[in-house]
Length: 95
Image 1: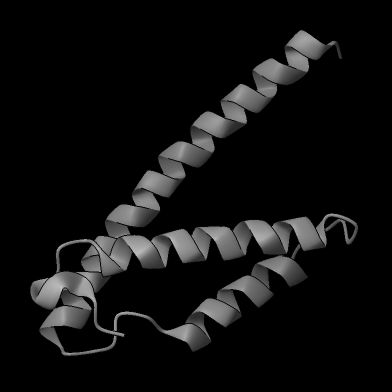
Image 2: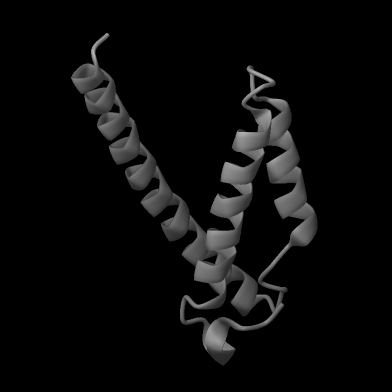
C-alpha cells in the first residue's frame, strides 16, 4: 500500500471515529438528564475504570494496549467534561 492509500484509509477511520463520538456524546447528554432527574452523581468513577480496563484488556495486540488505554482514558475524560458542562440543572457541576 502506498502512503496516499494509507492516508485515505486513516481519513476514513477518523470520519467514523468522529461520527461515533458524536453519538456517544448524545447518549452521554441523555444519561446526564436521567442522572439529574434522579439526583444521581454525574460521574461514576467505578464505571469509568471498568470501561478503561475492558477495552484495554480486549486489545488484541498487547504492544498497542497502552495506547488503547490512553485513548479510552481520553474519550472517557472528554465525555465526563461534556457531561459536566452539558447544561444540566445546577450547572451540571455535581460529582
